[in-house]
Image 1 (cartoon, rainbow, N blue to C red):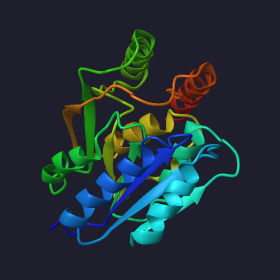
Image 2: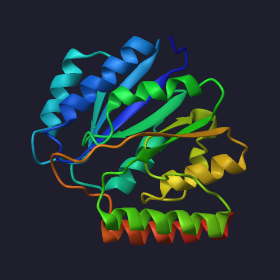
Image 3: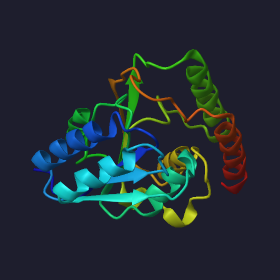
Image 4: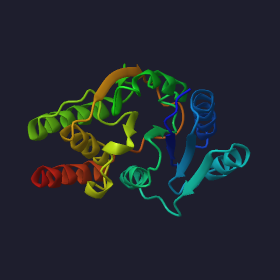
Length: 228
């Protein structure tokens, strides 16, 4: 059994078709592998049954809680708030669209003992070409400006609490994940990268690659560059 405490946060906005299965699989994996864990459903102002499904699950499963925004705040806000509220030894953020199978969380566990951050990359990425292109530009800018290179900046990762420098987080866009990686690497974090399966979205609509998110991420990247 894993002795370190682990918090897995499922981010959701109008994911009524998949959020229940995501929570169920996440809970199953953690309960059979971890001594101390918490499953958090972070609902970003959903207008469908997502919120009700989360409440129903939490009512019958201990170590589960629901955080709910009254209105949709966007992915950048959710990421930032999740890391700022982190209280366990490890923090993990998962999507609620089943493009990541929570059962694959077990593939990270062997690396916990000897690493501070474990990053997964999407094998055979099941996204549109435009999303892949944006990611390639993102990685190129990171390499040019910060001399840092990672296989996949925005997929499932385990982050050790000691390398979550909450007081230094400046980003409020999806770039917050990249900022955490850059700062952790500068602090000497032991980082492990490996690939996990990536599945096509079967329900709902992808929301992360909006133009507003891209613009905010570029702004945050520039701010961080001049800060460090």
